[in-house]
Length: 170
Ligand code: HEM
Image (cartoon, rainbow, N blue to C red):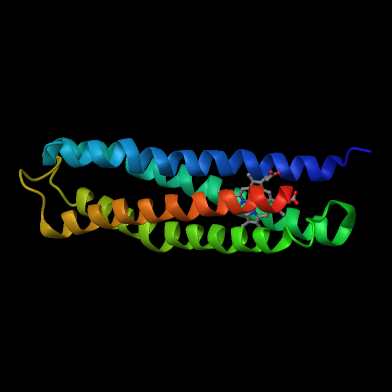
């Protein structure tokens, strides 16, 4: 019989993983390179407009993805052992978990912190003047950190995704 709890957890896990990874890849491939090409004042406006919303979206989906994954793991290994991955699939799932957690930590410790720093710098610019004509070294450093952190996060997520799919199907 279909296990409803398993299905709900799997849908929550995969659904939020897709939103998380999609946002991360979009930033690395489209948003980041486009922001870098903007004039400093337009760049400041854009970062001000999307920074907080993007961060909230990413943290919310990443947190639900990880939480649903951990509950799913506990559920299939404790409550319903018939659903547990095979002995050859389990190591792949564990590798996926390690890379998934690493991607989460990278998001919080590097991307989110640098993004907060950027938002703080933007908030310091006087009213009516959204940004300086040339970016400060601090701003350039933080923007590089967001771009680098997002790139590494996307790579870790990609490895986690491949490991999860292999592990679940072996
Ligand atoms: C702490 C982090 C994570 C935990 C604990 C976790 C746990 C799990 C578990 C227990 C399954 C079910 C395996 C099975 O049916 O035998 C699963 C499936 C899956 N996970 Fe994760 N996961 C995590 C992170 C991730 C990440 C970061 C991604 C992708 C970027 C991901 C993508 C998937 C996918 C696509 C499936 C479905 C695989 C399939 O049925 O073919 N997971 N995960």
